[in-house]
Length: 172
Image: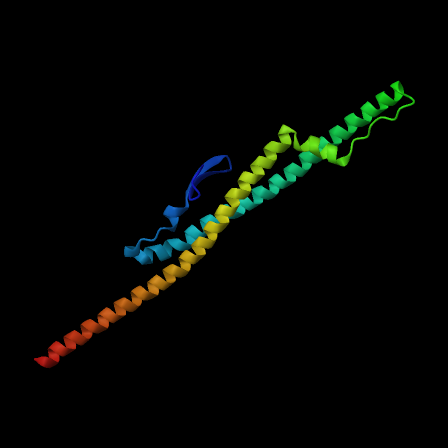
């Protein structure tokens, strides 16, 4: 089983390695740089998420087209068979295919199943990327708070140093 945080995605015939855990990691020693990089990381995962969503929709359309094509093939072949059977047996009516029987024939076709499997895999990737996008939104809020805390600590330190210097000057 592949890792949820690490996987590969094919974009425009190019394999891109994704490491969500690494990209979400925060270097506490360089909050300013993390704040600078945050928008680009968010945009990257938002773009990947939208790409995956688009591909899911494309696969849904491909599945519908293949379903329709196979349906037409089955109905045409069945009509042909019915004509041949009705010529041979004038007294007995040929058996009609039900919608359920046609549907079962379609979903058992390899070409149809392959597209459904691709769609399931792409939905899986899309959902992971959507969650990653949300994680980057949370990361942004956390970075803002960490930056605020860092500035407050710096301000408190500067104030304390001023007070210490002032007390040293006054004590002399």
